[in-house]
Length: 243
Picture 1: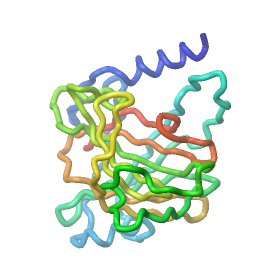
Picture 2 (picture 1 turned 90 degrees about the vertical axis):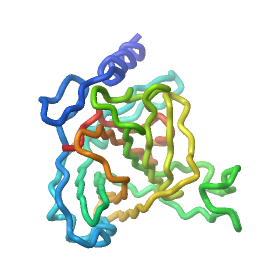
Picture 3 (picture 1 turned 45 degrees about the horizontal axis):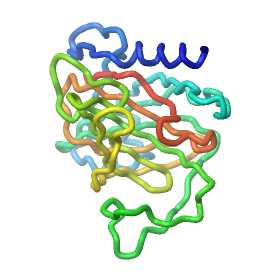
Picture 4 (picture 1 turned 180 degrees about the vertical axis):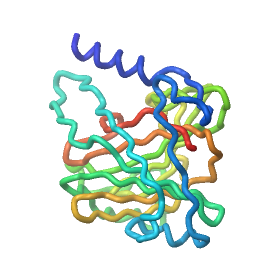
């Protein structure tokens, strides 16, 4: 019963459609606007997540929720990542986002790619000996098509309102995904520029996104490998909009 109540609460809070006009007060289920700051003329100065140029970009603190436990056989997991810092810059005609969060253990690995096959165009996953490990990851979700009146379902959109997901994994790198609802997420075969650094117990990852207009909804997710996070087991935010 407790599990069902938690799931219903999650669906009620995040599953509906909400106005996204940036000039309005934040409606239920939508977080406040995230400030995008003007960056340097040379966007490459922000490609490195450790660059001092990021300190001039306004910091936005975004609260993260833990997905509820779904199965009795699933080990309980403490919510150890409470927020992610989001910095958004518009520079040189590009939009760059840096996500930073505290993580006591860097769960990462280098997986050798399949010879002669671009990582995101292969039909089968590359073989790896890392079958018993889970890796840190992060993602930014945006609507595939911006609609002025509503935000997609937070549960990976739906057929009427699909979503695009910029996903970075500490073992496999960046990959562009798309979804039209729960259990529909798929790789597009495309990648995007992303770089990551782990230092002092903090992950910082830069994402280069397509130029997005003000009012675009943004949602964020973080996976903690040491908690065996994967797929829908993760930390996630509600929708926020781009100011």
